[in-house]
Image (tube, rainbow, N blue to C red; front, side, top):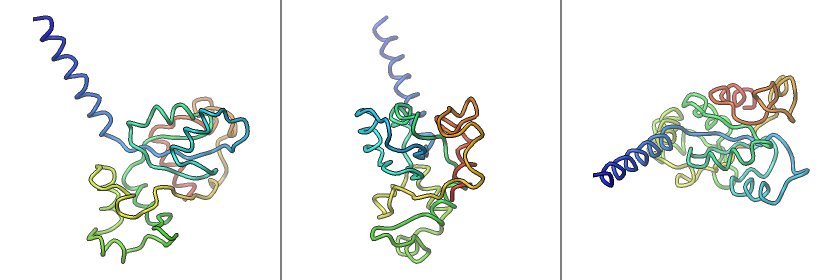
Length: 175
């Protein structure tokens, strides 16, 4: 009896983890440079493909631990479909550094940037499988970073770490 209850509880926990992991799409933006990186942080940034400052990468929530590990060098949070569609339209690049345009979307039988953003957030499509680069090169944010600068956490007025839904505001300022 106790073994069955424990088995049911573990199954419920696994289901909850999968729901949480499949629910959102996270965006990570590299804020700080290479100075003072430990080897672990350097390797994690390489695995996330955040090689340069002001580069953005879209990751699954399953990789949130990696983002938290390097949170003193990046800003990250959830990205919504509207912001993702605008990001793909303005900053999306194909292999060979060609712009992502309507012609390409018609070839792939996708209705538009909003449909592509919806498919990516619902995890029906992956950018790499479509031939779209997964790293977005952004401008520095208009009107600068937050008041306390790039060395402080977002919670205390800086630019680093987890932002939640406020990540969309930063992305819009950097597109």
